[in-house]
Length: 299
Image (cartoon, rainbow, N blue to C red; front, side, top):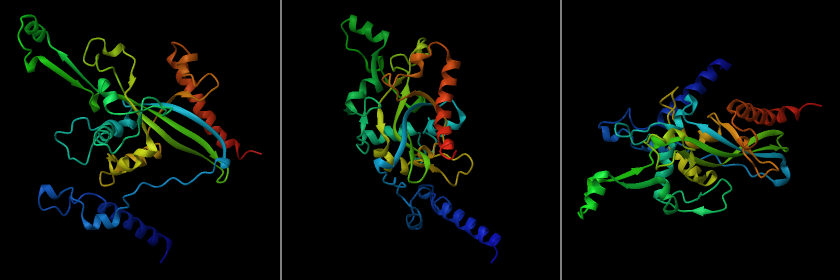
């Protein structure tokens, strides 16, 4: 058997395995059976996230913490944002924010914090004011002034949804593993970013500073994110898990902060009112990290 035939057989095996790894859509006799997990799928699907290898502290030759903003308006970041409307779509497809919120509510994800340093652990009740707000319509105040009970339809409840998420802030750890002689990246935390819920839908919405709703300790959420699948626009029969998507950095982020002697100040803290120069500074930081790995092999 020559090399060409061997490659074709291996490719066919991979494609066959990926088909089994999907739902039961080809074997379904009723619509309810489309997304059932079959015994063949259980046997062929490795339903565990790829474990991180243990890294000795003395093997870390160099390291740097970076904070990035992942803008969901960029096309490459769409798999993190969509779908925002789940009424007419299957239950197997959800946005990253919906996956996080569902598992925070049911207690599967309990490692949520109020900042990116993960010092103060919080609960869903602690962030409820940032996620849900209840307001009274003008007709409700009129009823109140007349001494009447406020009607239910005059009480408005607004909730942060996937549509309101503008970006994600991510904290990562770049390090050089001297044992393997390469630059590596480890994602530590992720935070959904939205406009203040009190201004969403108002005339002042676009002038507001975006807010971090909460921080999720990423290593503790990998099991959940591995089971949730993101859309693969190149091949719908091979969806990619959010865990794989984020670990492989299949997104575009702009560095807005790095660890530094000035208390990890932001780029905007020393480059004021100049978006172009802030972007160039972010690019400079990113290139300095990339160049470090290249310089390891220069003698």
